[in-house]
Amino acid sequence: MEPLVDPRRGDAEDDASSPATRSFIKLAGSLFAEISLPKLVFAWTSLILVPGLLLGAAPLVVTGWVDTLSGRITALAGFSSVLLLLLVAVVGWFGWRPLFRSAERSFWSLNALAIQPGYATSREALRHVVERFSPRATLPEGRARLRSLSAIGAAALLAVTAIGVILLVWPSTRWTADFIDFARPNRLVRPALANAIVLVAVYMAIASISWGYADSTMAPPADLEAFDLPAMGGRSWRVVHLSDLHIVGERYGFRIECGRRGPRGNGRLVRILDRLAALHAAEPLDLIMVTGDTTDAGRSAEWAEFLDHVSRHPELAARMLLLPGNHDLNIVDRANPARLDVPFSPSKQLRRLRTLSAMVTIQGDRVRLLNRDRGVLGQTLAAAAGRKQELIQALAETASLGSAVHFATFWDNLFPLVLPPATDDGLGVILLNSNAETHFSFTNALGLVSHEQEAALAAAIRQYPRASWIVALHHHLIEYPRPARAFFERVGTALVNGSWFVRQLDPLGERLVVMHGHRHVDWIGQCGQVRIISAPSPVMIADESAPSVLYLHRLSSGAGAGPRLRLAEPERIIVPPEAPSLASDWRDAAGTRRAGRR
Image 1 (cartoon, helix red, strand yellow):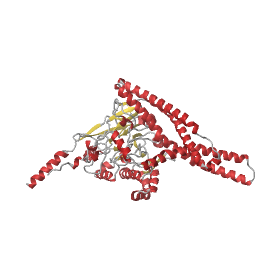
Image 2 (image 1 turned 90 degrees about the vertical axis):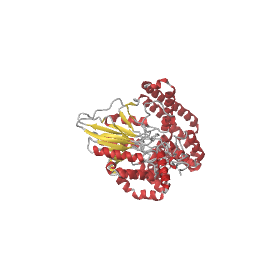
Image 3 (image 1 turned 120 degrees about the horizontal axis):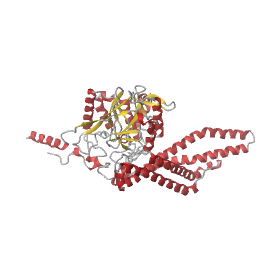
């Protein structure tokens, strides 16, 4: 007897978090209906209120210390006054450094949480509207012009808004304090928050104008007009680019984004690896880049599935490089987008730990961390993780808050990971973590490249001035030069400081290519001097009968190519789908059982 409902085809519960089967309005409704208010209050307090208080209180503490010091100098008389003066001076001298660091961290935390996302959202919202309704958006020249005007418009809008906020809040600010004020600190809470709002608003007004001008004058993204011919007699590298494999932990498990409207199972990965093994046997591959979203929700079973499949091809594993995607790190609950992780949540750190473990397994002895004090490459990833073995084991076994906090600090200092070039003029790889600190599954897809990572990237490149580079990250750097897609895809999946990052890479564009995934879009283009390769997902295909597609890139340099890293036309690799389909497979199996009973 056949089942009433084929369990392999799932049911409505498999669509709980899927934007492909449920509108974002319904997903948002689920979020507000099921959100944990205590967790939300705690998250707002730790992410917004506490950084705001620390930032706004910094000028009050400094002026209070200066006032006390100057008063003691004026009233100096006797040995006890001298001792008190020295005590105040010593406390201030040693205390201002942690105060400054705390205020600085708080400011950049608020910047990453509100200012940069606010500007990016406003810019993309204007672009979405004008590209949707302007007839000029159908032409590349017109679309580039509209992009520039949208950046200027967003900057002006945010600057005016920031000035209005400053005028509104200014009467509540206070920039000086007396020593006696700290005896009743509750009186300083309101002015400290007002100070923080004004400081952030001043920065928003200045930064948005600066960003808007830079975005409006930078070269727009465009399709790559022509590929390079390989450098004859020079160095060359064969690089496979994979991304967004979205491995699930169940044989018939559905991916979050697809729900029941997409692929299930991991059979495509098995066939892809088999095909790559055959290509490698025919002509050796140099690198296999996996640019994030290796798993669908960062679960242990998903990583186990991936590592099991890769372990069957050690020759591929020895050439593979991984970096984290938003699905590896930021999915709080694959069945409930309303679930919230509080800062330093052990669950979030466990997802990071699983990703770290996979990276150590695949590439731990090959990639290196940057010694930020000296600006040079230091220990391997495996060595760095080995020194934290006790902490890692404690987090894996107990998931205590203390181990989670210490592991978070360790994780934040890992990236970028660098595969150094084999020779001074060889090819190196820089792996970035472009995932923003988000605590909802609903906002999991946002990205951000930190200033610290960009500075470390520049230091690694300076160490090898003749080398060429692949810069790899998960998120797309800039919106593609195509007609506007759904607004949420433009904003909800954005690298919020992507245009800034492109400008940092532009002076080095001749020596590098950027590889990313995230949007599952098949595109090779250029923004200024920076060549960008976006990988399609070979798994996230709505039509189960469609083949998987991936690309083999050939990079070359030297022998007349000069410092330029040449990018040849890629080889398109097509991997056939699994056959037969699930439905026919089930019917055939059921028919066989019935025939056997007869």
